[in-house]
Image (tube, rainbow, N blue to C red; front, side, top):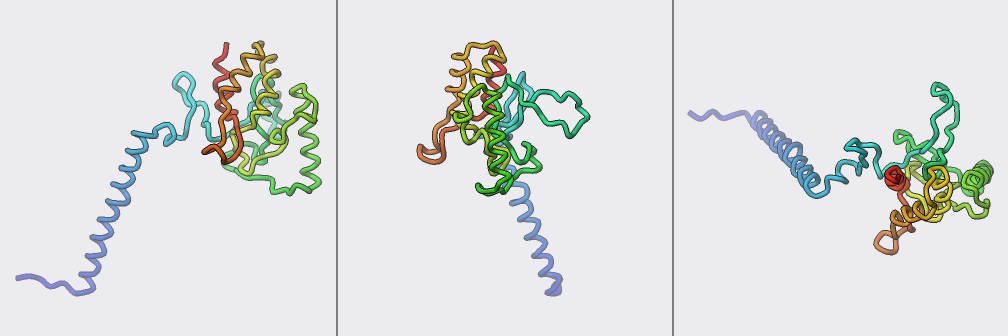
Length: 209
């Protein structure tokens, strides 16, 4: 004899079956399908666009980082980082290239603190690269909105080439050729500006003898 369930219990069982069905579909099957497609066709991007050295991940090309000399006192958190002349330098970062603290300074173009910082950065970059202050590009002295931007302008990359060549005892032409290979055009031919990924550039620079 067929047992007739109370309406309330029947509705609860229907809801439970729907919950289990959609859990399997959207919580297991769909993620596995998308992951499989991503790994099969876009594994490099799906895994974070990692750069490797001797098979070991060393950086992500999507996230900028500082290329600094070791601290004189590793235990002094207040000691400022000093840029390493043997590497191409990224643009300034209000977040210190900390991916857990992404963001900008939120200072407007007329802010006196920002104007003073830009002037100080321009003088420092000019002295570091051995160029006139007037030739320092804007992205060398201004931070990006995210604080994690890995891209710099070709002008800033070429400006640093001679300094990097001197520090690494390489021919300037060889370093400039490396820079030229990393210049990327505008997205779709008209969006944004030409750019150089400084993380990828330094990764390839490390391979030069």
